[in-house]
Structures are given as structure tokens and as C-alpha cells.
Image (tube, rainbow, N blue to C red):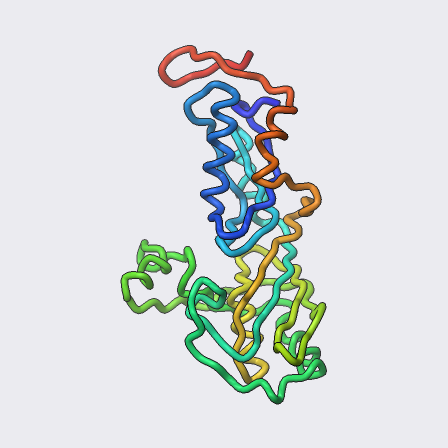
Length: 245
């Protein structure tokens, strides 16, 4: 493998780590292995820190593939807690409101979910990386600023309920969608459509394009995987350039 020239890696991002944090760890390990200060590395399709699953990393010239990869169809599994909301629509924040759930049944959920299939309008979460006047929305929110984001047109190809517990009011879903979809915001909207509230308690990206979670390396296993690869190392030619050997 030639990481300096360019490779594409499939990582199963761990829980409570940012996509950039996972990338930084992999970049450090690769750079140490090939003998350069910093291998050029990027990722396609950011995952929230509380999400797990498929994170595609590109090195070297393969970073030019990132924009194309981000447009590939994505698949997620998620668990929603009905009857409450949080500011971030997931467990990053505490519950800020509760709602009735006595009226929610499996039948009501199955009747409601089809509203979110096809081309839909979705307002991104205020706690997101969306930009407002050049600033990240989540940074403005953490400073106490008012953030108002505009709806975006998205494509959801498939949405199904995979389980529902009427006692705990938790439901699980599988979503196949296009670029820019926030599953946290989808949970919010499903909760509202059910006449209640909802937030995410678990989220996993199980597929990005043709890459499935079964194809991915865990971050814990990455050092051992790296040791097993036939890797071209680099020699320094000047202050900026390297040559693979």
C-alpha cells in the first residue's frame, strides 16, 4: 500500500469520538509507519460523536475522491426515544421537554413513517456544522446566540420501523437516504408527526455507497491491521517532498 500516493480506508468510527478525532488517530499511525511528518488525509461524510459506523478515509491523491464519495447513498440504523426532546435531538444534551405518548401505537407509527419517504424538506439541527454567516451553527449555539437554519431539500429512499416497545416507548428504524440528511432531525420530525417528541439514543451508519460496516476496521484493530500491510515507506527529498521506496 502507498499511503503517500493515495489509499482509501474503511473505518468503523467508535462511539463518543468525532470523525476528525478518528481521522487524526489514523493519520498519526500511518505517518509514523511510512516515516513522514503528516500524510495528507481526509474523510467522506462526517458522523456525529455519538454515532458509530462507516467512515471512509482517503489519503494522498485519493482525497480528491472525497466529494464524489459524499454523494453516495447512506444507510443508517437508529433508536428513538419517544415522548421527550433534547436541544441536540440526541443524548449530547439533557431532556428539555416531555410529551404524551399514550396515543402512540405501532399502527400509528407505521401510518406516519411514509410521510418521510421521497423528497422532503428538513431543517438541520441548530447543533450542527451548518454555517450561519460564516460561522458553525453549533459554535454559535454554545455561545448562547440565536440560530435559525433554513429547510433543505433531501431524498429519503427507504424508511422502516424495525422494532417498537410500547412500554419504554423506544422504536428502532432503518433509513436509506441521500447526502445532507440529519437522522437527528428526522427523529425530531417523526416525534412531532406522532404528536409527541423524540430524540436519538443510538445511531449507526451501516453503509456508505457500496461500503458496508462489515468491510470496516475498528480503530482498536487498526494498529494490528497496519502492521500486516505491505507498505511503501518514504524518503525525504527536501523540506516538503517525499519519494516512496
